[in-house]
Length: 316
Image (cartoon, rainbow, N blue to C red):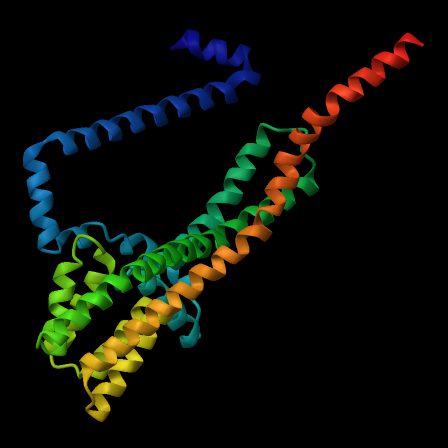
């Protein structure tokens, strides 16, 4: 111990390096220990079975709830306006996050990233002395801005992907719904049957239809349950289908006839969108042709002539 102390006194300039190496070593050991625990938990059949039972009973959601840590932080940045909170909550639901603590975790992650990214910039600036103060200040502001905006970008990306999956599964659901209603089933049993059929092929849409059926069984009126479906999904086509079903229920017209007409209109609409996308291909191909193919074509076509001209000028 005395030898180490004397060495550190003799090499005071390298003390920071020693502490850095010790911190890195400790972090690596903690990471390896955590990774070993994850591997052991994944390979242990008893733990896997207990996790499955806990998930079935809803205990996993409580075990993964970090409200004790994120909750106080989220209260600092959570907006006071009810309209803004409701808008964010609606986007979270459309992205598939329905837990009560999702809104709190979202704003808490914003604050954590807004504080951690500038802190990383400060740590990195210690090892980059060539950076000026103005550049460091700019990077701090940039890191805080990225930390605030990154959760919104990720949420919008997840939301758009889920909306795309719902839109892709709607044609199959609509055809199945038409078949079920025309075969004599009522609207609620038809929705339940379609939800079971879409459980594996389109799980997102099947889950949404199951929620509609659960709300109807719980006593919620059909128009209200269908409007909740439109607000949860955020898909325009589903919104149109919900409006059609609500009008059909209100005026007492045939549900099968209305669904058949909407199905035909929906197929025509999809065909028009496909034709529109096909018509845009010619314009979109201009940029790859100009940037990728034309230079190669000019090199092959004009390159030999240019080389001959250069060789002719060298001989003069």
